[in-house]
Image 1 (tube, helix red, strand yellow):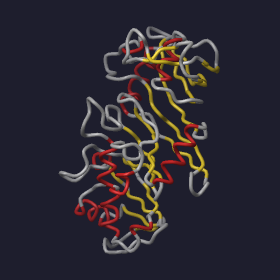
Image 2 (cartoon, one colour):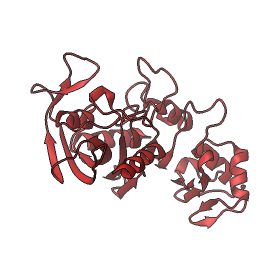
Image 3 (cartoon, helix red, strand yellow):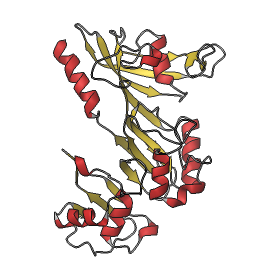
Length: 309
């Protein structure tokens, strides 16, 4: 199984050798990139690159075929955590976040975050966004995997932030929840605020901020572990919104112990994955759509439940 990250060569890398360019974009050692070139696994605008000394041009599409074990491994002493870049240009980046990764530094995580890794790759984002957050437009919880957006320029960050606020970015998730959801699709419209009893959690509250989640049943699993796979789209983006909403309607996310989710032996986090992002590019106005398959741990749980049904 392999991955094939693609990049649009930015103006800042115009004229750079292809091996150096790809090394900077992926965070791989030059020697590793050279091996990829020799193996015929690097492409410029769809054509195989046969020499590492070839110079790239701004706007070209640069693609590398990477085996799983080589996927975005940082150089020693370089990036603080592995970053799976799905797409980037001068203004924005799309990342496929791994479960367990922390998005930005906080009180309990001062290092090893994705934002810090992006700063190592793109030093220009040091002053983009809130101090220490380096281009973070929205975030995913530590246990949630999947696609998220970063701003790589001030204009990209500000435009994406406005688009998120005005609900112009469609964010879709997959979640496996306890029980058989009755209706094939629906809307959960319930305001969310910080829990009075447990300040580290959120809760449905009349005094909270408006929160709207759309859902559609992908599949129901009957049997010893009745459960439902849902496709969810956020109309708003409150903290823990999907987890809180699903728990409130009696179908908590499996593996989400914070919100009454059922534990499973081989699942170490909530079964929640950001599977799709769809939006107009904030600078070029081009339609952008990205999808991320379920990671292995969630795929295995689905197969296990399917086998029991």
